[in-house]
Image 1 (cartoon, helix red, strand yellow):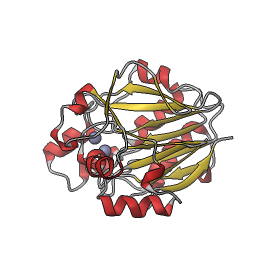
Image 2 (spheres, helix red, strand yellow):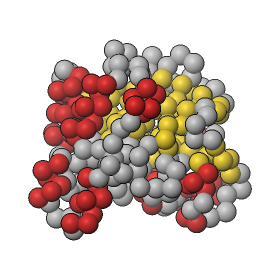
Image 3 (tube, helix red, strand yellow):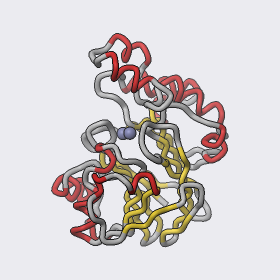
Length: 253
Ligand SMILES: [Zn+2]
Ligand SMILES: [Zn+2]
């Protein structure tokens, strides 16, 4: 089982998870042309994608989903709430998921996890091939007991480290946006991400990725630091997902 990102941040997100022939793309915040280029950089073509999972309807996650799904006739899995958003357009094969119920795509078991974020029915995902467990957890303003229970004992984890509290509060964002980002339905800051890691069993963790890092209100060093101080690991253990290229395939074995 392996995973990679094709880009992470407020200008567009996309994550790939593969086991055998099953390849799922989580979110697509890129134009069709850009997405084809980014997939090629990871050695894939759109025709190899088994399915697209959508976490929520914000543009940085949904922008490219419709065009990609229509051109290559890829099934799209979304929650009932996300499906109500006009940004998806007409999808040839739209699967509405129950956001409290696990389902299967090829050889992968997908467990949606409802998160507090300012969208209609946002879900993040825990994905397993029966042997290993991968979790992606971004775009949430706070974590809940339910989230903590779902992300125990992951082998691979992509965790939001969106902003540094001080950089956000002294930074250039308008006051209203600062309140939104820092709020319980906004984005996880570095210390919340560090705190989250203290609540989950990280014994089996082979890869941890700092994800959805703000270009204006954070630095890679601060994001990595907060993960390291919780995991008591060296900085080079933490992979960074960036906006330009994401990060390369990481194998869970
Ligand atoms: Zn986002
Ligand atoms: Zn969002």
